[in-house]
Amino acid sequence: MTVHFPFQNSYSALPDSFFARVAPTPVAAPRLIKLNRPLAVQLGLDPDVLETPEGAEILAGKTVPAGADPIAMAYAGHQFGQFVPQLGDGRAVLLGEVIDKDGIRRDIQLKGSGPTPFSRRGDGRAALGPVLREYIVSEAMFALGIPTTRSLAAVVTGEHVIRETALPGAVLTRVASSHIRVGTFQFFAVRRDTDAIRRLADHVIARHYPELLGAERPYHALLGGVVARQADLVARWLLVGFIHGVMNTDNSSISGETIDYGPCAFMDAYNPSQVFSSIDEMGRYAYANQPRIALWNLTRLAECLLPLFSDDQEKAVAEAQDILGAFSDTFSDAYQAGLRKKIGLFTERDGDDALIQDLLDAMAKNQADFTLTFRKLGDAAGDPAADDARAQFMDPAAFDEWARRWHERTALEPQTAAERQAAMHAVNPMFIPRNHRVEAVIQAAVNDDDYTPFEEFVKVLAKPFEGQPDYAAYADPPLPEQRVLQTFCGT
Image (cartoon, rainbow, N blue to C red; front, side, top):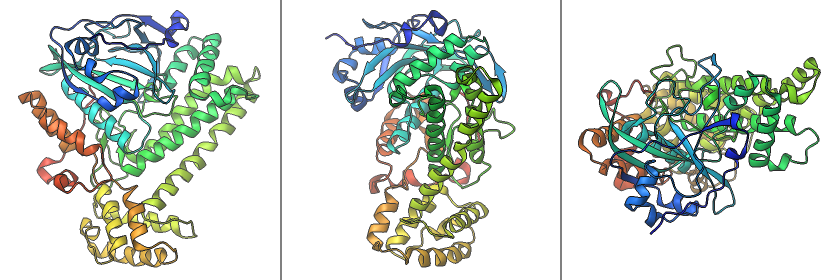
């Protein structure tokens, strides 16, 4: 059997300044540890063939499949607020693009596939732990209904990478609507290459915003489209307690997908100031800061697009500011609407925002588990005697006072208790990739070559809104000794 990828290569048809042509570096003994079979089918690939040794060699970068045009993409970026004029894919190679079953163009990229001209003296490799983390979290985000890059496969290479110690090497096959970032525009803006910015913007519009092709001011409309998608995306993050951890402009996707799962994490106890990333020492990318940082990143994109807006700098800036001004309302509308759904409100009334904020304030004060509080609140919607939500609070009386007001508010709506509970359970997950579970899965794989915990965890996370009583323990918060206080970048 021959592995066939029906590649198209629109990005590599752009000028050479957009990328470097580079093949993956072969590895010693690739072994497939996980293939996302449903995603393979969605991409028009044969999962049975991908699971052969020949398939493993392609997914590890040992063999380049026919039709591929492997490249490392160029981009710049602000990293923790500091601008770096050249970053680029330092350990990833884009093999090509395929059109999936829904007619959507998807990148297929190997992450951890060896050095590129953008590696900056790095080895271009990935350790097994970060590969498993990205597989777990990206697929969990997909199951939660959040726009995200996805994971097609994870392969161990048969080689070690040297970090603090020698670790098993691995390669992740990542799938994305594209890998174009705010930093991609910055790469050309810092070089004052307006022609390249226009070429890139035209490519993005054709690929991600085709409805704008006939717009009178397409580049203004492009900025507006990216603003809307990013505002909605970050609202969705907050609604499930997700913290990206490294929201640099080179990790901000133009398509509106979550990209680059490095030191990412989900909150256990609700804390608006929560930070897990070991490199975010000042809390720049803390949970509650994410909307502000998203707008900051979008402002950097707007700066890149100014030459396409007008030759009059003042006019261009004013027009960009007007477009960026829509972010706050778009985010707030999406976030507040999501919160209303989380507490079972179908309509909007005066006082709802205060009711919701009072719950969040009480959760923060009482170290209530973010995920379980909302999930168990759904149980209380169906049965007022259910007290599992109450049990999340150090001072249950704080919940009682709020719950009285909540029941008074929900009584004003016509839905039955069963309808309200079903609606709440449909938006409040039971299962998230809790940090201590992710770490346990990684340790079993790295230390014991045991992927059984990984397989089971991925299976549970694929159905986050279902009860799954056989796997109820996966919903439990960590014990004090199990808490993960820091997460780490995979580079």
